[in-house]
Image 1 (cartoon, one colour):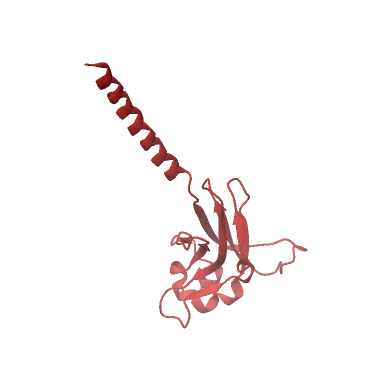
Image 2: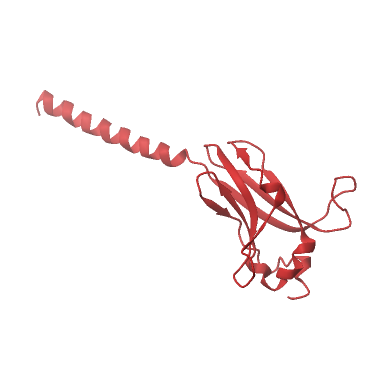
Length: 153
């Protein structure tokens, strides 16, 4: 093998290696939003919320490496209702989430949810970001029936 062939083989190996590392960095350095939904939470007195009622909580976390801007937070309803979403008023303002930031939390009043009790399994939290991507929470498990849905279960 001549010198020019050896140099070209090294160039090929290093070029392909650089391309693969570039693609892997691109895939690693994305934003990723995790959304969770919990029901039947109690609050303490003096917290600004009625401590005699149960509350829901939507938690939004950026677990990726790039910052993202969360534009709004809502509860997505199943088909069959007059509307498709219940917008969380505290989540309309929007918030920038960067890597390592604490989770953003949004409180949901459960007293308005009784109307949707028969479809409680299909209700999920939804978050839209500035890139147009929609992120959803997982559906609740069958044994996690919220108190506002137990009458219809």
